[in-house]
Image (cartoon, rainbow, N blue to C red; front, side):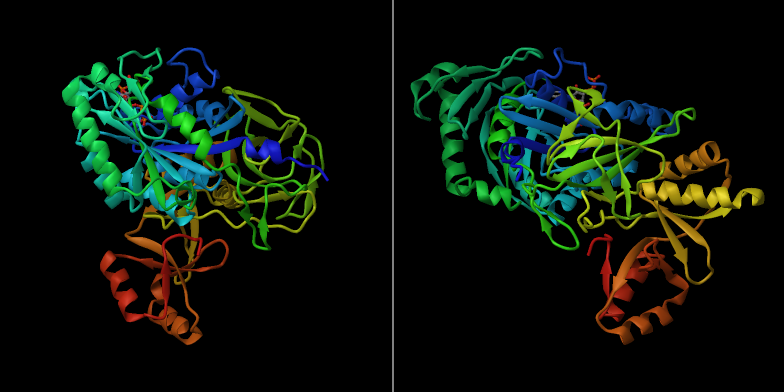
Length: 526
Ligand code: G4P
């Protein structure tokens, strides 16, 4: 039996998440520099969407187009094979990010030392928590004035609802920033503001080593010792298992822009972060070490160029070995398929790949066969659990504006939903179709793509709606009573599950109070 243990063990597949502007792109770039995947800073064509372009979604899509190449960044670092999965910074594409998080084994969260935890980070952390994804936190921009590190730690715990454990500690911040003491490796790194140069390390034996005093001055050395004593007193010893279980997040401090603290983060990351783990399928748990290939589609990237309408389906390899041209079963359709030109993403380049192992992402050119969440196997009956959809917050009725093109509209809408652009609901009261999204931009994207890719025209009709949530109950009578009372607000999702469309927070709270036997879910994964 084939044994891929070594390949699996050396893989680290993760995403970097942050609120826009905290430094995700900069950190990604520096990690690539260390991996030798790029040679100069500034080489990453970020998929960061510039603030000026927020209303121009075509521009955003163009930038997202560029980002196909940076969707997955693979590189070798020592014996490790690292795959960084990029996530769109723009909040209107938050669903993309949520889904990407289902394909990673761990996460690095970047927080700005001056701003602390911001909305986007909080939301993304909720997704990590749902899946117990291990997280490491990097507190960035220590070269700028910011908050007291102890306050930041308190805020991280309170806002992200996870215990933290500092593994490095800064000596001052802003103008007076002198460096960090690396608790994980017990070493001292001095700060030199320089974008290209790595850190200067002072060899020390222990925290009382006089070389610390020589390097940073007696006062700061004394403060550092006090701080470290406090840390040891307050925070339990770092326990890797607690981190792997998603219960404690190690924290590093540094400055991505100055390449400071980044190598330390990376060195610790490769040591402690998990290699690909078992993945839950409906039938059973699938271990990465199983010899048969299996994987699932977590993202479909449409090509915005009308001359090339194909998409790329991103498949995460979960078990076995993926091979080019081997026959694989597409579980949803039952069809066998072969892929002649699967691509891998190494050092920012897309190239045809012959084989891939668990943890790797393979890009498969596609013309509408795939749907987000689809499973591929060598033939075994496996269905990876669906990817979570979150309760959308913006809703519009979608209407056909060209009666001659009803079929095209229907096909277009179904395919765009398969790609995960938005969610479709069927109102049970008036029979109309509702599109729900997390961002305003999606409505423009859908309208444009329906016209340009399917020749169909749609019209939006605004509706006032607060939230859609999935409902279930063990008590069929309670369910029937609920549906009867709320019949005007009942809808079905594409899988035929019951969805309650609450038109205000008040109505939702009342419904929750009045119907204690009904469970209200804000994510489709329950
Ligand atoms: P994002 O992907 O999370 O949105 O953030 P990004 O890396 O683009 O960083 C946002 C801004 O913060 C950038 O400045 C970047 O240079 C800066 N930055 C990142 N890390 C540090 C750091 O350690 N210290 C300081 N002082 N700044 C940092 P910008 O002016 O918005 O963009 P750019 O013109 O420099 O690209």
